[in-house]
Length: 294
Ligand SMILES: *[C@@H]1O[C@H](CO)[C@@H](O)[C@H](O)[C@H]1NC(C)=O
Ligand SMILES: *[C@@H]1O[C@H](CO)[C@@H](O)[C@H](O)[C@H]1NC(C)=O
Image (cartoon, rainbow, N blue to C red; front, side, top):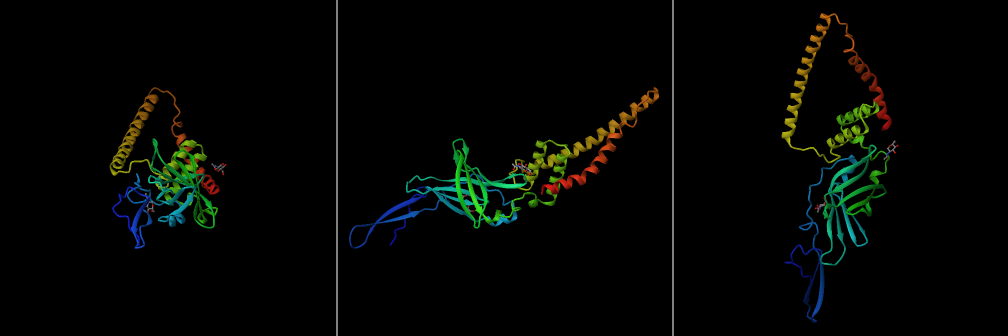
């Protein structure tokens, strides 16, 4: 006995109340509430979500959604996809919006500490964004929502997936190549060859290559090709320059010899030999350091 509310503009979302008159016994009003789907035409994501990444046992969450209602808002968290908020109100203009689209992981100390959902609906001059943090629990559910600063939301996701003490380690999720790069960065930091900032930059690059952080690198083919040929050019040029310098050293040496001026011929070879032995010695220490860290 329901009258379907066809013909009402889809932008007039949320609750559509239509009255219908029927029933032989007289003019009786039957109110039919119909919630139109929010996710259709109304919510327009600004960006596409990043690919699924991070701990393998988290990948099973892709395609699922978790709902939490707090005061008058319903929150929906779809891991690796989006977070939306729907005001539970009968007002015609009740708020419904995107709090963020899946972008990247937050990592501290070799540990995944949160999922960043960014580029949500506009909020003044910026876009809404949400960090989802994890808490060990017997079952998966969205537990808590707060807004630590304007238009930046924090959501707690309770899940058994984070209960194992090693469940959120970053290093084991990386490919062998990237693990090796991290080992090398770790060693260079240990040896004081790079600054803390240099180390963090290397790590950022590794995480970007792993797809854990959203890359700021331009992802079109052409610049890579240009960069590659640039490398070849500079390598070629470097070899040429080195050859020129060798010639120059040879020339100066013979000049000194000609004029009977003594010079220390060892000096040029010494630093090279030193570097080689140091590197050999450093490897076992660096590897050990990394094992300690894990
Ligand atoms: C949010 O993610 C869910 C699950 O993947 C999807 O069905 C829905 O269309 C998404 N909504 C928006 C507004 O992106
Ligand atoms: C990272 O780990 C080190 C050593 O275990 C610890 O001293 C430091 O407080 C940790 N930092 C954070 C932000 O957790």
